[in-house]
Length: 203
Image (tube, one colour):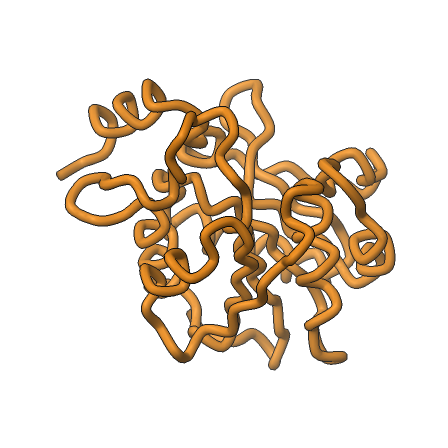
């Protein structure tokens, strides 16, 4: 995707979780349509953004996840406190941003149906709003991911702890909603969700 007036938005991919709800397997290492789950979101992101735009946070089975990402051009950070929850991964990622970053797109790694089209739509809306508002997707009546937050929220994100994400910290008057496809609300928490995704995705 082309740069807009040198605006830089970091894509923070959260891949550190221990998949507690999934069972005794790491869901990101599950096979899905000929690839591992983590590779689907990686490939979708790389069809739209430069590898330098990405920052991946790993934790649980970090070596295995890094091996599956298999891209030396992408910066990867290990969150040693990943067991304390998603907030710690966001916080760690925020400490590795350059000063010129105007926004951060927070992307869960377990959402293989997110489309390149929706990623482009969300980023364009954020830029149209002069990188001042929080942009989040909505499908039908459900808010989804990824969410893009402006620089005014960076301090808040750095201070996240435990299993609290960014959503609870967003002020309502800062929110701008973009209508998107079902992939923005469909995450893989269970084996049945993975089976459903298999039936939904186009081959």
